[in-house]
Image 1: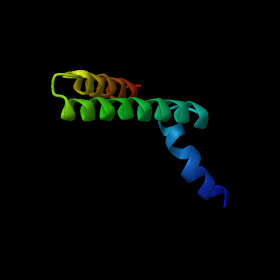
Image 2 (image 1 turned 180 degrees about the vertical axis):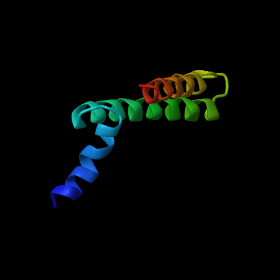
Image 3 (image 1 turned 135 degrees about the horizontal axis):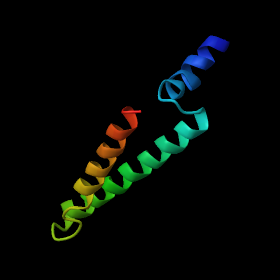
Length: 72
């Protein structure tokens, strides 16, 4: 049971040099940014003059965060 809990909750955060809570905060913030980008893309789909670059800018920023994060 202990090994399963470690594998499910601690191994990956440890691999990226974070605690469980640090990793949860990062992943939740990342998910929020993705949801924001998805909303902007949906608005743009309905009204093309709105949010023309919001989703792509957000995705580029998130990509840079992930790339910088893995370079630790």
